[in-house]
Length: 103
Picture: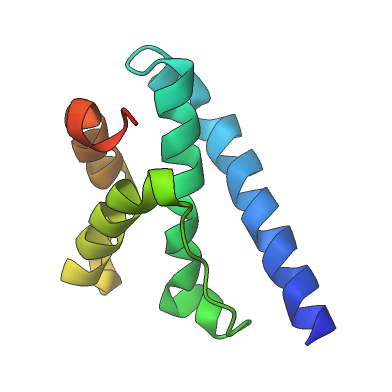
């Protein structure tokens, strides 16, 4: 529905703002601008978690150049959704930046 699409867009953009606010300084020491952008865009797959699916049924997918990282993030989440540790997964993604973030 139109409202659902609008909500999904709001969630998507807010997710970027929150990530930027809380993690930009942390990531800029470890990633170049392109890698940070790919990470920020790939994180939207986390909008498909059970927490957001209660609000909207629209599925978020990654652009072609972020699919590998998006898939990695989703697999990490799926391992244990009830105790997903965002910081641990972020650090793991950053440590694999040459294979996951450089496109």
